[in-house]
Amino acid sequence: HGRLKVKTSEEQAEAKRLEREQKLKLYQSATQAVFQKRQAGELDESVLELTSQILGANPDFATLWNCRREVLQQLETQKSPEELAALVKAELGFLESCLRVNPKSYGTWHHRCWLLGRLPEPNWTRELELCARFLEVDERNFHCWDYRRFVATQAAVPPAEELAFTDSLITRNFSNYSSWHYRSCLLPQLHPQPDSGPQGRLPEDVLLKELELVQNAFFTDPNDQSAWFYHRWLLGRADPQDALRCLHVSRDEACLTVSFSRPLLVGSRTEILLLMVDDSPLIVEWRTPDGRNRPSHVWLCDLPAASLNDQLPQHTFRVIWTAGDVQKECVLLKGRQEGWCRDSTTDEQLFRETLLFPALSSGCLLTIILLMRALDPLLYEKETLQYFQTLKAVDPMRAAYLDDLRSKFLLENSVLKMEYAEVRVLHLAHKDLTVLCHLEQLLLVTHLDLSHNRLRTLPPALAALRCLEVLQASDNAIESLDGVTNLPRLQELLLCNNRLQQPAVLQPLASCPRLVLLNLQGNPLCQAVGILEQLAELLPSVSSVLT
Image 1 (cartoon, rainbow, N blue to C red):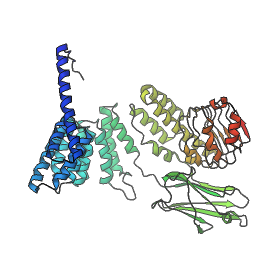
Image 2 (image 1 turned 135 degrees about the horizontal axis):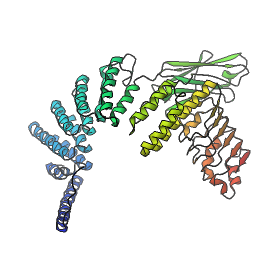
Image 3 (image 1 turned 90 degrees about the horizontal axis):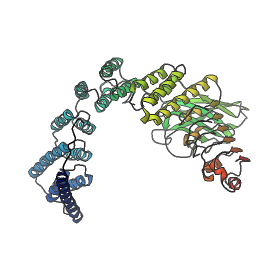
Image 4 (image 1 turned 60 degrees about the vertical axis):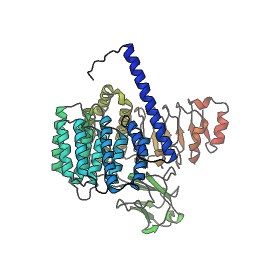
């Protein structure tokens, strides 16, 4: 950093080498002595002395901090209150000296938290002053910021005082991720809104004031990312509304499927679903499409035959989500094989998630993309794609991330176009996609074309497509089919020219009962000897396999 590198003579280099070797021997000797005493159960003050010698030079030796804690716990039962107070005072002083050696030592800050947590009356004011001193040296020391939040919580410091503290540091240096982040934690506490979560809305006057502050940071240093990151946090200040997106009933599968605005774990204390059939409660077992008991956007249950008979002109199904305080109802008419009710996917709902993406080296460009999507994602689609090309050129280190984000936006736009056209067919071919997302919104799709992209896998979330009949995924780089499982209506699967290596990767397809056509041409596994016989044994219900 601007310092000239001074060449040393051979004699000086040799002297330094010998000095390092001597220090290493002392270091190893002291470490061995500590471990021997610990193993022998000799947890006394000599261990504190030995560990002080090592930690004073290298505060990042986590095991030795554990040793010190064991010794201090032992001495608590042996020392008088006066002796213990002197010991704690010495320990705090030693910790401060270690922090001067390495102000970003995880072990040192953690040990200080532990020590103060055991004191009957800690001096929190002194700790706040300690944080202020270290942040004076390096205002971006996030270890110290974490410790300050701990101290402020324990000392019950008013959020307004902490916000004023962040003001002083941001004014001194706008490039301060930790300080901006702390503001995002403090503002919802200072300005709680009715019916809003801890990370929810802020009053308009507060937002305008914060936007003015962050704009000053932009003009001061447009290339610094911390302010752009905080700016996107401000734009995303809105509560995502819990919603039951889609309800689908299938007479053929005797199954009811429901999708939600966020992943949830049905059956937990807070996430309870109630099913009413023709205004009568029905007890059912809920499960995820892939059979895994974990949070999911989509849940389904089996229906008894009585709830699906054709003796009545219609059956009414209503699902009540108690935690979200929302419900949705759909009707299955006599003679129909399925019925559904869904919400339209709005631009705002899709955009809300994109506001919280990590900051990039060209924060202004990404913010422009996000704002264009907020205004009209379809109108500005061409300009958005051009900006992505520019971003990849100026920030090649994050090219893969940008490709995934671009894929996400293109899929969102395709979903909007499909819904505007009121069809159940989704064409995503030749879009250079690298990842699939929002699959929970494709519950009603019957035909999906993913051909000619850069997909490497079909993710487990694909199991949410309960109505899917035809899946085209040729000319990708697919190596795994974990997501093609338990699709009750899938009949045709086209996987030409991918990277499927072994017949075993096709095992998930055995769970698709109606699959009759499978095209594997151009995959490495087609070169295996006896491949048709292996596939016939693995997938006996598939009548047509092309290799």
